[in-house]
Length: 354
Image 1 (cartoon, helix red, strand yellow):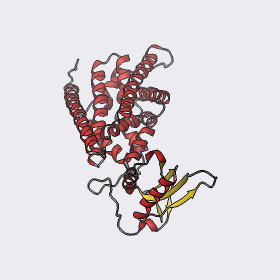
Image 2 (cartoon, one colour):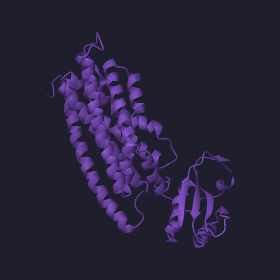
Image 3 (tube, helix red, strand yellow):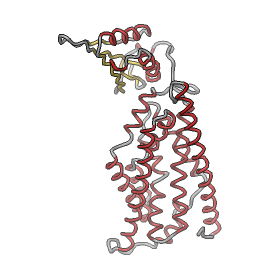
């Protein structure tokens, strides 16, 4: 039977003591494993491999950490393409699970690893963000939905948002600092790229006979912020957290997150180049409220699903920090929602905001 909810755990032991104690844990839990010992003389290294259902990896990793021999082994968790076997499909799962209301997710270590891997090299991240912002601006100017979708597909926004959430619930300060720095620098690069490209289009002869942009902005759906955008952003955050903590794909969720950010950035660029302050104010509020709402939703989701530090002291510290950050996020979202409501009311009544 082919299964996709499995992991292969590979433990590399450096001493005989570590090998014996690891195999004892596996035998106590009645797990199938393969032991490969180093045959060279004078070495004590060995490799132990065993398959596990995804939601049970946390339990076994905890058992191995309790051995207090971390300096004598390496543990690598591998996601296989498929496992064909009936052995792991029998009976009820006897292991402790990381779960919430029947939810079954990956181990904490794997969650941190996945979130870290979603944050690319900074140069690549900034280049892709700049390209996406330019394409989004072109899509706004052309009033072309396919072009906007292209900007959403190439935007690398999901990684820093999810990494920020994971770092908050699992108290990983280095990952948190890195992901926040990526979000801030990415926002600056995106805005500069969008504004620069919009000015280039307006004041150069590259594009001739361009349509009246003021009219385009007035009729564009991207310049009419709606309070329901917060619901969309919250949904993206929930979906991102659920996909990240399971074997689900992140690609489509990444497009959904980019859909809440890139078109408004394109409108900001056009609004600055064509001096449309109402569009600028509304879309800046849209970008901020979407990013903050997605982060808020993903943090709440991950904590509710059971992701937090294991020790009671670390969990209390992480919970205190998380609550402070949630309070700031909630206050910011409410303030921005009021701005959006005012912008929308002005658009409906035909009264400019500025």
